[in-house]
Amino acid sequence: GAGVSQSPRYKVAKRGQDVALRCDPISGHVSLFWYQQALGQGPEFLTYFQNEAQLDKSGLPSDRFFAERPEGSVSTLKIQRTQQEDSAVYLCASSWTSGNPEQYFGPGTRLTVT
Amino acid sequence: GDSVTQMEGPVTLSEEAFLTINCTYTATGYPSLFWYVQYPGEGLQLLLKATKADDKGSNKGFEATYRKETTSFHLEKGSVQVSDSAVYFCALSDQGFQKLVFGTGTRLLVSP
Image (cartoon, rainbow over all chains, first blue to last red; front, side, top):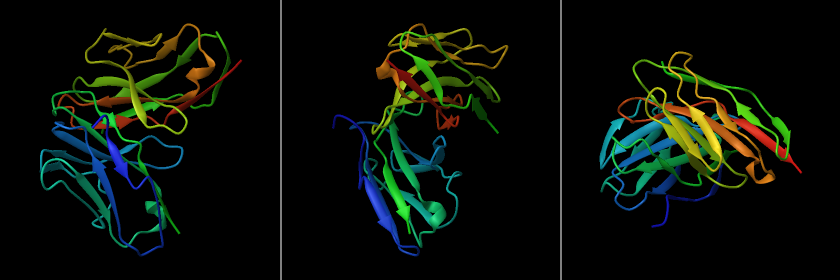
């Protein structure tokens, strides 16, 4: 595709609900990243995939957060039992390889937990 | 751990004014440095980058020079336009380019 796409763009969840956020990276991009951006802050790293392998998940804030990329293309970030502090914009980015410094970002999914 | 500090905003300028947004970093090794821009209602876009000391990144009239001795990567533009109004993020990545570490962002408001 022309760029990184994410869906849904907006998600409202009641506290305690599970949510799934989807990322479609640029075709052919090997590396995929998830970031969390709280209101008025810079994005913070959550996790990183190279193809289907999750090589770094050090930024996931709790075991309620889970990410997968089973076929090395589309990725899903799942948040179980959502809490109000999970409200943020979730950004996905992709790059050609881990050796390429340029990451291309999607528009983000704004999650609001009520 | 690695970190990025950038000046707080908002920065308010008149059209054609000179812009500087300060950015300093703390990192082990030799990181690559980036400026990303987020226009209203849009996603993050890479504005410019520098991958080693003394490199100058430039794009759309914006420039930043990688200064290892002062651990800085200040963003400059000689004459801003209303269309430059956006939030600017300074970021670094380690030598493996496996994640970006961002500053908190600086909002720029340019008035006609």
